[in-house]
Image (cartoon, rainbow, N blue to C red; front, side, top):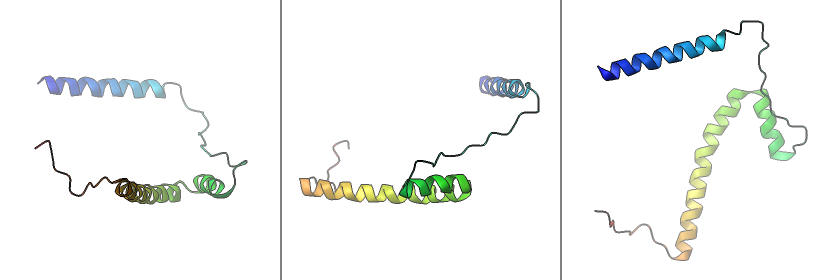
Length: 96
């Protein structure tokens, strides 16, 4: 019962906060979010222009690039630890 009461209060607070945000009335201009690419060159200019032209392509490319870079950094870190002498493949679990 306490959980339901808390959920009800959270929903009421959220509803009131959204109504307060809309209380300013209409007539406002839509916000345009763009990246300033005037002083950028190379890949940074391309990245900023991609963001300005298509948020969908920018999002898809970001979703693809982040895991790929994570795998590359992980492999580089594994290679660096191998050269230092740290072998993570034969680690005994001390916690168990």
